[in-house]
Image (cartoon, rainbow, N blue to C red; front, side):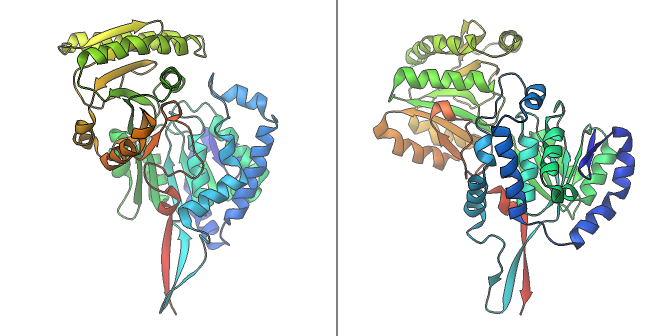
Length: 420
């Protein structure tokens, strides 16, 4: 399906839409600018309707099992959107800045082509929302497996505020359809890509010399344990986070690092943590979720056997989950789906070890004694982490927070200096 001009079109209309798209985009750019207030009012009104349950049947149809709107809804409120603008762009984000000889005008990039990820429901719509807040026209390449959620949300948004319709186009387009992908990239002033190294390389090949590339690549996150404030509560919260996210998000815990050099302490932690993980896995939503977790764990185990398991590795297998102790110190992807890695990383080795993953670090879920928190937060920040949270809220969305250490709205704008 295609979303264009505020409505849904069959895929058979794609060539006609693409052929006429440049003229439509130029007409929009030649007209009055899109005001942030128009976007905020529309999103706030739609958010209130969502909160009131008006679209419950629609959400049941499109949202994956176990995924709710509890964390998303606060981000759709007027106060959150206004705070985001103020935090990222200042108190008068689109005002003219007077200089001694010039006036600096803040304008949108123009046209953003978003290649959206599929690892988090709602994220394709949110990246378009950021483009709208900065006055850009948005071309969205939907992720594989979106299943209609983004198209439905964009249709509701433009029904709420028809003035947004000329600023949003979405295409359910396979990445392998090179000609059409290139046509969209050629229309864009900036290409916004989300994904791993392969996706970034493909986006670089698409973006021509006149198209700016804005990368939001895959990141790695972990928990760091250096003592406890509430041992049972913190370990249970971490286990809940691991199971709830399936470890599929950039902010999901892949490795639990222990501030220790004692192998026996590491093995003891694995034995202690496994029951917490099993309890969390027992409450996992979806009939096939437990099977998926077991399959993921068994597949990872078979791969390690084929590759030759590293000396000193130990597997603690639970019901629908597992904990794997590994003797190395490297941050890496876990087998996911409730199968987590545990490694020893004393604080004196923390910074040099993590610096080997510079540019890929995102969230650290910190479990420690209250008196050590300030010291460890500083150390993690200097190592390159861009989010430091408590272990149970590693994937929580916080109003006004940066994205991978940057404010995205700044990247979607440009400055035009006009001589007086």
